[in-house]
Every structure is written in C-alpha cells, then in structure tokens.
Length: 193
Image 1 (cartoon, rainbow, N blue to C red):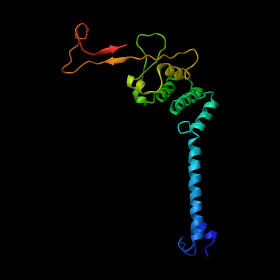
Image 2: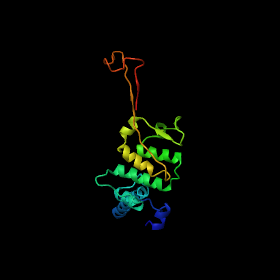
Image 3: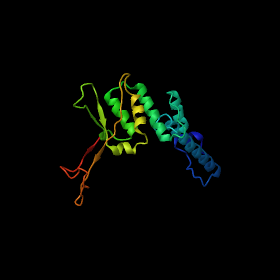
C-alpha cells in the first residue's frame, strides 16, 4: 500500500497506475479539477487588482473609489479609460511628461505618435501636444471629452484646449484643380486650420 507521505514526497514504494486503483484515480481527477478551478479564480482575482484588466464589477468599484461613476450606456472600454485617467490625475503633479503619458492613454496611441513642442509665437508658457487627425478619429472620445479628461491632470489655473486641423493634399498625375479654386496657383497642397 502506498502511503500519503510517499505520494507527497514523490517517491512511492510501489508504482502507481490509475488502472490498478479506480478510486485513487477518481480522487486524483477530482483534486486536479478543483486545482484548475482555484487557479482560474486566482487569475480572475489577480486581474481584478488592476484597472486595465478588471472585470465590469471590479472596474466600477475602482470608479466609486475615485468618484468616477459609469455613465448610462457607456462602453466598458470608455469607462476603463476614464477611470485610468481619474487615477492618474489623482496622483499627477501636472508635469508635461505626466500629461503626455495620460494623453497616450486617452488617445490610445503610442508616445511616438505624440509630438510635444512649444509654439514660437507665444510669450506665455504654452505646450502643444500634437497628434495626427487619424489618432483623434480612432479614439472613442470627442474633443470636449478629451479636453475634460486631460484637464483633470493639470494644476489649477491652467487650461487645455483641443484644436483640430487637417492636411489638404492634392496631387496625382491626372489632378487638375477646379477653375476659381485658387488651387492651381503655386504649389499644390497646404494646411487647413
């Protein structure tokens, strides 16, 4: 007979085969199923510790903790972004680096797609975070919501504006600008602001 200590220590004195003891095989199968269930539960609980991986209930608990309730009919991913930004804003010191980091989350874009620069023509301290329109078009938020989310991350007395512009590009071997459009003069292409 094999003892529990032998099984625990991994050195049974008799070889074990499920075929020789169906009751033992049933016990091992039951324990394996329970361990799989426990591993699944532990993985789910671990995921619920983080905003990025939390399920709906855990995410709403995060939101309640920072006074960011879910809006009616708001998608889970939009809500997840708002909760992430609210937490980031709560600990933000309002630095440019933190603002850019939060902007990457709001816009769901890598930092390489955001350009940070200071305008040459303004005397007051202004920082511009510039992204292509394709980034803005891909985000589920409108300009007002983006502005509202980013405003939570900056110090009091400062402001954020979201301005959009596009690039007009006209080219091609067979392109002829319409008469009276002014596009046939000078170089084709230009910036619309």
